[in-house]
Length: 204
Length: 225
Image (cartoon, rainbow over the protein chains, first blue to last red):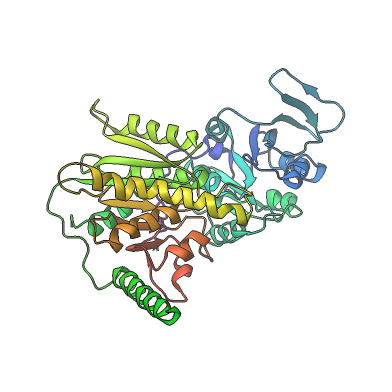
């Protein structure tokens, strides 16, 4: 098929050097995880990433900061929260600094700064994050009616480009996450569509 | 008298159906022979992920060959129009503006009930016929098609655009080639637009091979976006 293994991806997470040969994170690192649900409402995912099991798993893997873009989901971050003028909530929980935003002006900046992205399984988000060469865990939203997101997530999981899991399996998936087992995602190849159209239009 | 009317109707409908059948894409027919160096292209931007994928496809093209470009957006979808303008600003080397953004009314609004969809769809169809059939027909000089090729990737309103292109074909007027690219998000089942447009478009392309397993028209060329 079109899997270009060993292809240079340009922007691997900078802290990749801190990963030991076993692919486990070095606990002295201060890594950042970013969770996004886009403009969707996905309460279960937002709740899950703020739960003790997920935060503990993140801390164990060396993540000290978690940024959450919660979209239209209902957020219950607990008691000791401070909300600033920009509608950003900050909370410290289970050893992780958490920042919760309803919407972020630029998700790309967040993807860039993150080591791991945990997101809903929207195809746009998946493409963008994988093309940036970031580690990705996707959680398909089971409440969607026509759930083709799940097909996409599980196919890319089978190909090794990302990990797909349910809300309940998220803590275990974070604990087991092995960056060395992630297959690099092929870069955008515009030549395929361009050739197809040239054939169709009689240029070739 | 009644039997005469029925007979006339039957003959008319038969001729109509035969005509439609005769203009359906024929896969043995060669692609459009093309001599000029340039070709005009229209791209429907269906909002959200559809827009992102469509603009990614367009970003791969040689803009000096595919010119001018027409971006079709649904009424009220200013975000898609902005994204198209941003791509143009980024890709075009010259200062000359070689693209237009065309707004058509929506075939169906989100959550609109099926009964009220019919008049909305008819209005949408008429605006598409206006752009694709009437404007080229009424322009002075030779009839030039609205565009040489029309790229579609869903949703809803792209069915209406396809129907308008078939009006041209029905009357033997020049019409754009129709290329449908199913979304990267569709792995195991086609979208509704995909299923409906599959027999009607000249080129039907999917991005996951499983979609062609059960046979039927279409081709797979790997991931295009």
